[in-house]
Length: 76
Image 1: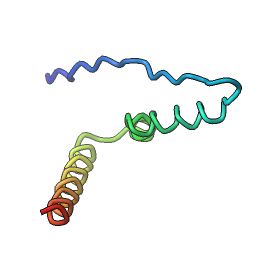
Image 2: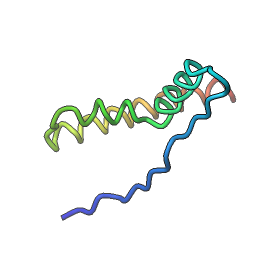
Image 3: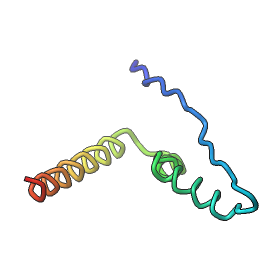
């Protein structure tokens, strides 16, 4: 049996300056997107068989490798 890694979550905080709630909400949504919360919610919406999960992870890793390769070409 495999143990899942333990993840400790720090709360996302956004300050509201004056009555500008819209700006604070936009900042919160941006932080949530950067933290990967939306992606995690989408991933957990449906059960995925272990074989499908493995294939998805392999696809994502390949995508990251290609992106890193492209970025390396632009910078170097």
